[in-house]
Image 1 (cartoon, rainbow, N blue to C red):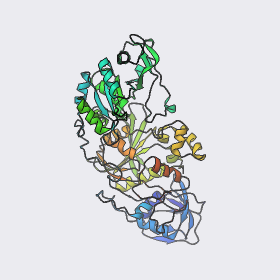
Image 2: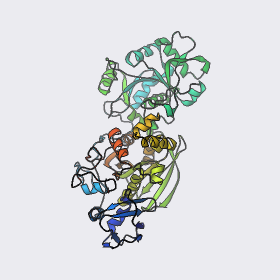
Image 3: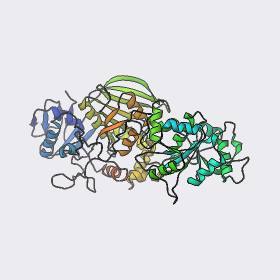
Image 4: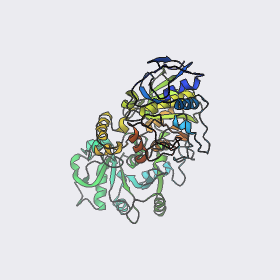
Length: 555
């Protein structure tokens, strides 16, 4: 027996078809009632068909939804959902059935559609990506006072930094860095050292408009044994003072010519940036957790990209490594989460094993809902879901979060094997509940979700997926069929050594409340649905080619 369903007349707002999927799959007959009663309690053994274009209200125990429902629409849903069957295979073809798209069945696209397919062996953590030096080689050079070139992602634009241990810097090394870099010489440091030296952030995290939210502190010069502070000799002196455990706040002038950066605890396992990579390399080399870093520029002053970075490293006899390789190396040796409890939970979709994980970095507790036996860990159906109180709990129509959560749970239940990782601390794409509500007010005044965050001085998306990746690996997942529309999530999980063997887009209903939100995610944030849409985010193949109304079941 599936969950009970109440159907009755109501005002038309939006619809949510995922909850009735189980009923439709197993329903053997459709009965017609005329006139339609005000309320019916249904089971999987019988399903009533509403009169043509009746306004229907669905209640699944969590959310209420209502919509116009025609005979044709109902028959299409019946035909789509009653077929059942296994999850689609992930061949090299890109055929997707329109009915599966329209009614949100397991619409699948191959991993190579839109997202980069990774062919490397993700599980030999000490083997570098092709064309890069190994992490042990880089660590050895750092120990010996040499520089290395570090690039952020071998599949993207690949900005590269010159990096070396701060305590081993020399005037000659500093001159080389200034000659080949931007001239903005930074020093990554742990929070405890910044507090000891009384170096506050230049702006707080809420006011940080920098693209990657790099945590700059006030700039400094060494107070002693320097002149203007700008020469290679003076900058080296300042860096050495920052690296010294004996330095005091009074040893520095503010502002200055060196830019300290706040290292995020957990390093590249928490944030895959150059700040964290530089300090991680110093730590792995057995040195103080303080490192020099400076972005490399091309001869014309533009940022050097991977092809030029390779040429530069070869010409200067420097090792070049990727942050992705450093992440894999550290993941083999570090653990950032611990299991905090587990229990079997009966849900409206079926029984799931709930596993609570506590972050060793900030104490936040996350949950993984596991269905079935993970087994060898390959081709596991996975959803990594970001916390959304308004959408997940209160059924907000502003976003598709609650719909995606329910659909993912339903898909995993239907597959009989899979994991949903629920990451807390991701509210509002990382800005928090209060800021999200403030952003909603701006959206009501005409801004889209990106513009609202920017006007508030907040990052558009500050979520990180390292914790989720570690939870998946601890559960035994090695490769996955990932339920997502977000390429950033794909890159984030792949960077932590999880292979994406396929992708299943989660297609929500388009309503007047969420239409602009979904369009903004597609246009400005690169979300991909594996489908063709027109300029108003309607699926093109709708029979008559016309846009659906706000209250008609869509995708």
